[in-house]
Picture 1 (cartoon, rainbow, N blue to C red):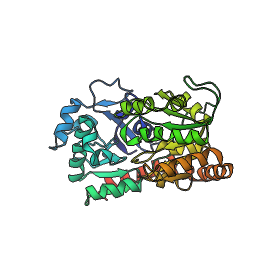
Picture 2: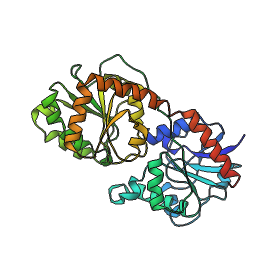
Picture 3: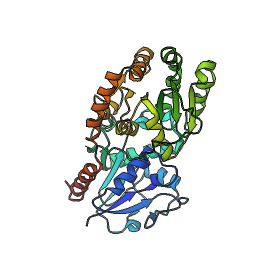
Picture 4: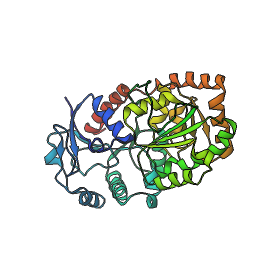
Length: 357
């Protein structure tokens, strides 16, 4: 069976959207994976190769040079797949997965380590690494940065999560229709804007609640400030739950009446597909890959357009005919995103790259 070196770094530590994608790619793989990690600190899963380089030094080097190469540590593999924006230099064919271009296009807003990853990504592409883009929207953006890059679009699949309908949720009263946002509190999620809508939303749907569930990111202070600076009436209808486990995520989706996704950019957008899985209508920004993934299963609004967002959220909360139409569309749309299909397309790409195609 074909052997592929496969970066499982995103599986060590708190699992983000990228981590969930990597875990699903690994669990559905139709080739023999050789998992590797660039980390001295991670508590490794069984049979994982630890590359013996300090991560920061390796990333600095990979952004400028074609060494150190990890080939002798990875053994006899057909190619190397970097699953999280970085693929090390190698004498074997290389594939690097890119989910979005936010860090490339907003370097001043990201952590220094992410900047090092982007430098390594640039050099990898310039030295011939093939790119796996998770959406056509991401591929189009990549081509503006790397006109000569070789890029293949392979959609990810719909995420799996714990189907937990029953039970209370700490920090959330049991009454009122819920507008739910799931994701790390980072700038591109545009959550202060979502909070700013609640004054007008509860003016039309007084019982409505906004629930934001996600770990702290680079916008956590701004999100909390947006809540604290709101009126008392708004503050009592907005709930910041922080990072929650998979069981609570399942409960939240089933409790929600609408999913709000006001992102400034997305390379894929798992919450959109999760909403479809639980028959929950979606209101989302019309940016990045969101229209591609959502299809006609969401109400799409221009970024930061208060009027459009308020009207769409209120309609999604109150218009039963609209809600049923969005739910039906979502069931059909979700079926287009299947991890087994992703695995087959990845194997096809692996074989083409290994054969020099």
